[in-house]
Image 1 (cartoon, protein in one colour):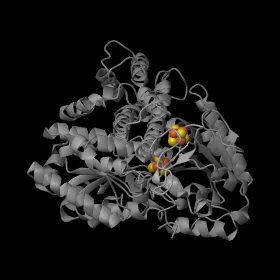
Image 2: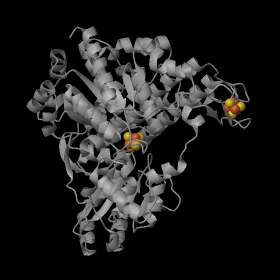
Image 3: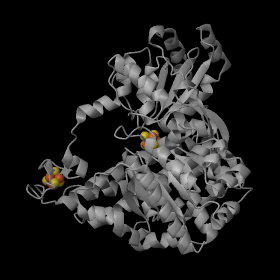
Image 4: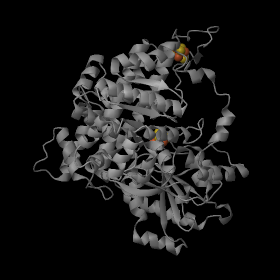
Length: 616
Ligand code: SF4
Ligand code: MSK
């Protein structure tokens, strides 16, 4: 089965009936996928190759240059970590560049001045007698130095507990600069540079930390400063959030810079009037993937779905415009859109799509371009083919969102102490970050939701981000009423606070909120992150960004369960390091377990073990 959800299954059938090719068909067309690549045993890092290593030991055991299986597998993994870290971090840099202009351009102002000042002070900036615009500009300059300069360490790494920082210092994996670690990773994996697999894997830790405590953390913090720190609110989710009688604009990608401007424009009275003149009852917005998570967390904009919904949303026949920024946007949506009246609009000079319409957003023009997108959607609304319309006949599911770390602390009455007390008393056994994507190799959302249900049953508080968060929301796990599915301890805590047992922490870059929360918990208790009864899981991951996230969780001392096997099984050495030896270095490790029930058992056992060691 492709998905556990009726909304998805109904549109898949509709599109299948008319022969529109979807991600699952294309996966089938690719099968059998290359065994060498799946094991990480192929290399095309230079033109003496491409090379591959025979996993059965009968064929070649060395590439043309002499690299063996361990080197090739480690190098391939390293390049994936570098790409994932680069993606989050470049997203962060875009936000910092806008921060430097905030208040000076029409579309972007400072929404959270307190957070701006707190961050500025954390960066050592004197905020007295300075205007908000001046502070924003100075903070942006200081943050840009984290990307690449002569610094010895990035600023926000200092949020980690002292013991954790010492572990990293001893391993030599403190990131010096966000860009620097990515560039060095690419350098090391060039032919003839770093040919010691253990050394390559250490640089994986450093590069990923430059993402988690660098690029991603900056992206989250600056998004909060520019667009507001999320607070709890309710909204709705699934394909039934699309409205037949309204102009539908789908917001897809990751960076809130574009989606936030479009949300503002869609609320303008003159544009709503224009939509009504075109025969619509209004303008409806729905999010996809992480840009959807961003506007859901801050503005309560409904969510159409997660990664594997992106083609299906067009298949409803009512998506008038799909406006995208970057990351996780399948080129295939342009092909599906050709069968409908839908315009796919790209907005970034670094993410153009063949045959899509390009409306380039800059900090200076975002306001006008957002209006242009809304007007385009109104025009496209008029061109809908009524015969092709089918919104799944299901009810939108309600959800609660907006749990920034600040919001959690506020809900707890101003400090983390009540949470620590609940953990100590055993009402809450531990905390798990459930993160990552959808992957067509896995029934959509089955593993995410199975894991989440089993964890809360065992009194484990789940915080989720990205597509995992969307999965949990679609089955109703993000409403306070879901507390009745939790064990008695967690249930009581949730009911007393009026919160769900699964807290939405945001988008992919917002995994940094999980790091901040765990670091704060560890600091408050006076232990290291690796001592906490905590873990991470990415049951349906697909992207290189997820590899970077998993790696910075492991580097931070967490057990991380992966539901989709990473391409490392061609090297016994790399498997042994990542699933075993790394634990003696960082306290964290990877476990690969595709079965979500078993994954939950592993995590619960791990949490019990950590509790035992803490004596609680
Ligand atoms: Fe082959 Fe070595 Fe070149 Fe990779 S770097 S393609 S293993 S020769
Ligand atoms: S959108 S990286 S599919 S979580 Fe962040 Fe979802 Fe994964 Fe993209």
